[in-house]
Every structure is written in C-alpha cells, then in structure tokens.
Image: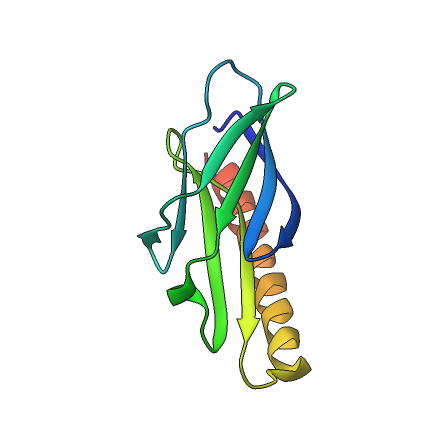
Length: 121
C-alpha cells in the first residue's frame, strides 16, 4: 500500500504539475511513463512538507489521439494518478461516452470480484 497521494494542480506551457504528499519521511520514489516508457526529466522538489511534481511533455508524445501519462509509486508499484492529452481530429462525445460506460462496467466487475473473494474466503 502506498503512502503517497497525488493531487493534480495544472498544465501550463507544456508542463503538467501536481503535488505529492507523503505520510512517511523521505523523498517519494516515483516514475512517470508514457506508452510504458519512462518520461525523462521530470522534476520533484520539496515545498512546505509536500513535493511538487513537474512533468514536461516530450515533443514526441504530442500526437493525434489520446496520449496517457501514468504516475506510479516505485516502491509499491501502485498508480498514483495519470493525465491525458487529446489532439487531432475532433473525437466527439461518442468516444467519451464509451469510455465512461467502460469505466462503470469495470467498477461493477471490481465490486463483484471483491464480493466473491470475501464470500469464498
């Protein structure tokens, strides 16, 4: 279980920013990936007991379609959060509706699986 919490703050001038809080002492060990490849040159600096994360968007990651960047706790391998870029042809509301439906169905499956595990243990 991770001791880190990520809160997105803004994206400006090609740099995504967030704040990481840590319930334990020490520098958070995180990684940022895009298409399962590490995103280089992100910056993590301490500010009043929290850590400011700045992720510059690599030029090669700016492309048509949906580009997702995943932020992970390296110690627990848990996903802390993510951010996406959408570019190119208008994707329309249909895609967003489909994604929301898929998320709802996944949540339903997760609840059913957890209930099954609880009942069979």
